[in-house]
Length: 404
Image 1 (cartoon, rainbow, N blue to C red):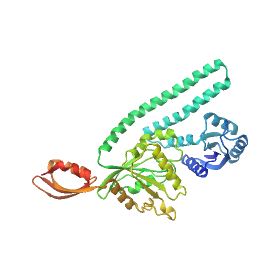
Image 2: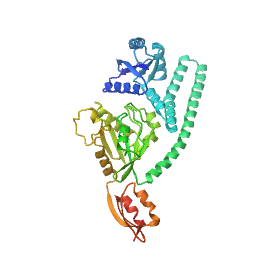
Image 3: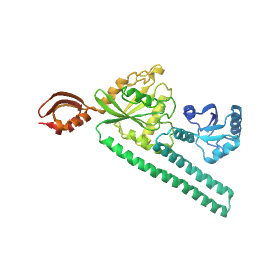
Image 4: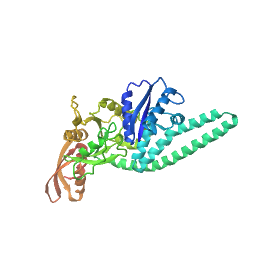
């Protein structure tokens, strides 16, 4: 569907970036931006965002391009959206609604769908209540004010009841997730989470890190928010194993409702032993996107977790900088170097232990193979003689199984 992007430029210093990002958000929702109408102003016009002359220009642009929908970069009230739509005779949505629509169309799991519905209701509730109150004041009169208060109360209660019901269902799902998370936390296998600006190549990197043959690759598409639900895979490399999470990507000014709604998705990053910030080096705005990622991580309360900055898509540009990790998922450049750094970071202290394990305890060996190098020497009358090399914490924990 063809759309026009409307922008009230409140003298944003990064307005060109925001416009380009909005175009890509539209594309991610199957919308083609055919033109951009911009008005510079100190503030939004109270009733219609654009001033009268610019609204007329917007209407003419819609007719000329045969466009049926306008997307405003600015977040607007329901009343303002409605008034603009009446004047230009075209459907009008704002940026947050656009993002919510993208998330709603991409969510696969029941949890993600519930989170999106809750986010949409929470985003709409203040707007609905404000528009109801404004309508009551416009009609005036004591009697109408009483009726209006009853209507506002009814709307508020209905929406809050629905939010409560959805959040109750989400709570049950989250309890199950907490149990799974607890099991993961108790496991000595380390956890690595991919974070970064949306469409930087996190899913492509996950596929590049997976060993071929025994692992199912994750979905990859060149658009914003291709990944919403967290993908989880086990990666094996040089006798080490770690759990790898691919999380939802970030954008600038990510609405609070979406950060809150996807808190459980982003919790994978909170629980990680290491974060990989995937940066699209081919994008001329990659430094700004890195800043956006840092701001979102700070907003959701992630701190103190080691981060490796990985600059992806170097195959698409002439490399000028010399960052430690310059990679290409497409051409598999420097992936081994990154894997070595991941292992060094999450399993820094190793020790070697030699001894005999009783035959009745040999099941422990199957578990140890995930994160230790194990060399079998020989079978004895008491058990099997092994040499084990791996993380100090893990090796130390199995001393009790050794036969003195």
